[in-house]
Length: 114
Length: 117
Image (cartoon, rainbow over all chains, first blue to last red; front, side, top):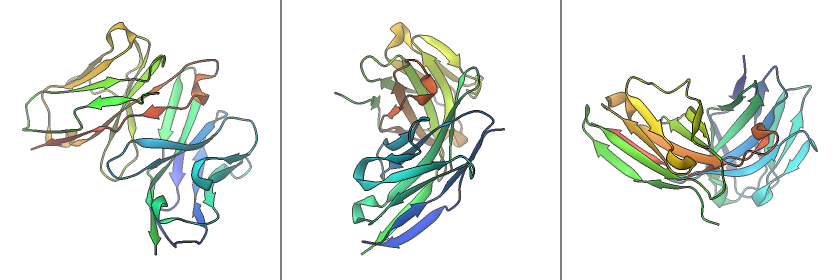
């Protein structure tokens, strides 16, 4: 069965310190992997995606993620957190099982302290 | 380029009443998705359209939910009758389908927040 696990429901960092949001997946198929951010009362915005090209993917707002097949992970990082990064982050797996299947993680709420 | 448009943004109804949500996808996007997002959880797919055809509605509770996408553009999601447990945010998304569709980015609308009393 396919699944996505975001290992932390909440992460709290101080402004200017690094951010690490962890995501592990399980899939029998080659996946595409996405990170989305959701600010309060807003729609989901794509941060970055991996689609079988370079394993280190750079996204918007200074975020990046590395696809590690051996660890089945796709962790999201940012060198220096900004107050505006406070939001909910979702890791998403999409696979082709004959039809396209999309699986969202449960989300990680990022808090940024001044 | 305009994004995915949804209306209404908020809806409060009493249980057993009907409710409908509308979505206008990004121009040129063949694929349209409806998701339900319960509080504190990730979105779950309800239905996916490719053009006007519903190609995945396996998670749609068909006893009370229905959807349509006339002419392969706008879509409407309906609940009749609504239950307390239907309170959630209903998200619409769209994407192009070209080649490996599972690699395509989904673009999300702002959602409709439904409260059933």
